[in-house]
Length: 204
View 1 (cartoon, rainbow, N blue to C red):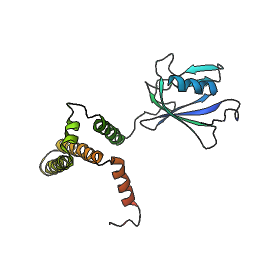
View 2: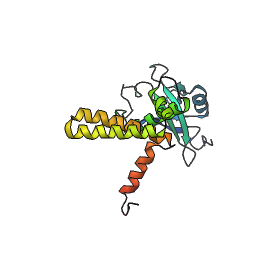
View 3: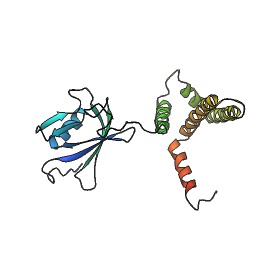
View 4: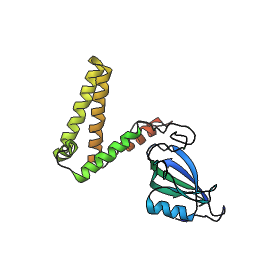
């Protein structure tokens, strides 16, 4: 990675972003040494301009920023640092340095669930219900999607909202398992819906 530390006197801004929620958490600065230490320890390290020394975020509070990924911008002088935060990020006790609550949309969990199901498909651990579905094959998985969809419809007509949400959750889970068995992802379903929402889209 080519980072131009010299453009601004040896320091580059480091925008800290939660890897899961995509929320911007804080802004710090890194020099080459802080960048190298961040990569080495996998804990985000900054250069303190006021103290003129390195500091590991969380070394006093325990609220570390665990490194997920670092990217540099198109001018090679600003970093986007994706992290998993351990505890609140701001020294005031808030989740971010702007006082925001660090919560992502619950819809993001569908991607996490897909990742979990894909891992089950790769590892096939014994005793896992998801493993049993993959072993039973695509016909069984498709049948389960149909069964859960029917149960959701029944709850919508004759049941309660609570039971409808329960059965709809079962339906989504089994649908993601079915998609995973075909090498597809739930995000591709979302992309298809985005395409359908565009002006001029015609059903094929």
